[in-house]
Image 1 (tube, rainbow, N blue to C red):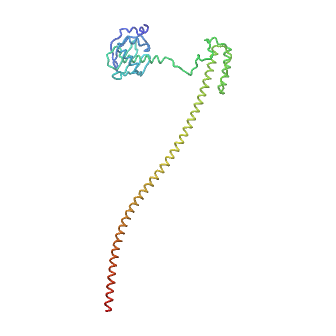
Image 2 (image 1 turned 90 degrees about the vertical axis):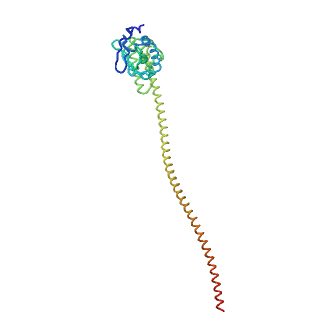
Length: 312
């Protein structure tokens, strides 16, 4: 009921329809809230059409809403509807809630896209004000001996002196890399809690230093491994280049051998031709030799006949 009253009972629910650049003004709803974060889902549901609220809630749950700019009194957003992307501007001004959307739906006083934008703003606003956990921060529940709640006025001057002296030793220990000294004999209270928190912080600091050393060692090992791999890669590149040179030399030698083989083949062909010509010449010489032998015999016979005629 208090939430409904912050809406000023939404007097009149809807006044005259206006227009401003970039979309259609659904209307002005009388509203006494001074921040948009006060407009909760129940209040929005009470002033919009049921179907518009259900679909807007579905859009918001499906992460279809993108807030582009938001403040306590005004927001701009874009919503991916079933038929396209629509832009909204919603603001509190002069006791009224003004809603604008680029869609053409007739839903009043706020369309489903405006409902989705308001619900997303409510979720974003709630998430923004929730304090985030800080694991590294000291937690009082982790103190070895929980101290009772003590007001600042209960701190004794003697305890402050002891705490001051102890802090000087703590500073010296931190500067020399030594563990923080044990806490002084102070009764449970605020000062005792301070010393316990400082000891816890020092323990975490030393754990962080150990982790940092391990991380640095791991980084150095990885750098050394990378250096070795780089050297191996450079050696492989050099070997690859030398192999490429050898391959080019072999290719040239193969080309030379191919050229020599082609020349040998041509020479062999010429030799075969010359051998045939020699055989032909030899045959002619043999034939002429036989003819000469026959002519020689004829000459001998003629000589014999002439000798015989001469004697007669």
